[in-house]
Length: 273
Ligand code: HH2
Image: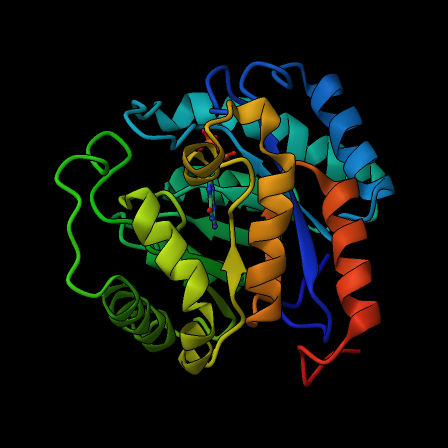
């Protein structure tokens, strides 16, 4: 299946973490059948794409060996691609995992390291799939230590410009940019990214944002991860009105309903279909 980053309306990417330790849904979908049923439900609720991940990248998390990540994601991706009419992205920064996932049917790479891991740029170019390039300062293990920016939006934009140009030089034409909410950012940085989100439009590529249930929402509301739905909807409404093309979410039904209301109001996307 092919997937186009831009179809004229905001798309919803449903999160499916096949991990024991993801910050909000860890351990729930380790059985491929449970994972499949979750994907099926997200599609019924209106997801445009399913993002399958086999390694948590939450703050302080440890990387897992690529073989283990392959074992987690491949059966799930294969099962979804055989039975559901939905594009699947793989949330990985490792070339071995990306290759195996594409063989199993994934048609998009969602790379939180923005093709910086050795061999990943080559795999993306060879396989000719669209790539999500995300900004992260440091690694998940270290990214929340000593977090400092002079101008958070300008620094993220400069990074994304450089990665878009690296991808383009390697012959990768379809890219999506993502500021990487929560990846090496303090709550005030995440809020500033949202406040100034329209500035990312000048990158000239579709924009993806992952605010869903993240800790900056917990910081504002003083609420645990399972109580962050309303905050997620508010954050996503802000970025959509300021130009986001894809929102990455755990709660598909609620976010789709929020989007339908924004679309009914209209006036926030020139290219709205
Ligand atoms: N956030 C997470 C993982 N992958 N990919 C993109 N492009 N943008 C994001 O903001 C993003 C991402 C972290 O969320 P989650 O997958 O729910 O948790 P974990 O990393 O603990 O599995």
